Image: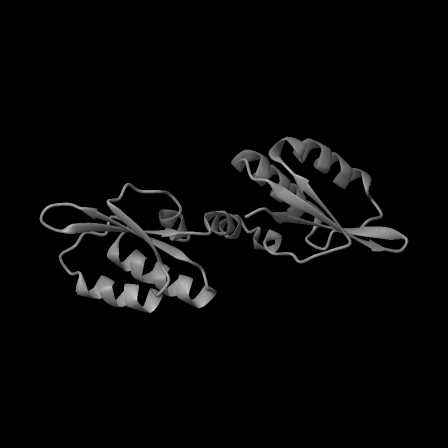
Length: 163
């Protein structure tokens, strides 16, 4: 199981900032030997390394606890990470197409039905994955985009999470 789930929830803090310089944060983590990292020092190291390699943004949170500070890291793009952990990373930044519509969690039953009815149309993300994505959006309360490309004689459909 991935450790990324530790970095998706919010924590209280006295100070918060975006950690744009991940290399600096990794160095500071090593220097703060007495400070507290409730997510686990080793997990924080792995998290920062993975974020740097994938170009993900992190948020740094600090809480003054006597005599040392308590530090938390959070993933700024938490929706994307949740999709990745659920095996649905194909539904992030799909691109632009001929037609685009916005969908909300309440639209999921309709889109699910349309997906079933469009038997000749193409779903490059996979029909089963699209169903899983729609259910995921409904459960999490995420909005999404429906994107279509007219490919004669049928359509090609994509879904994308709204950031």
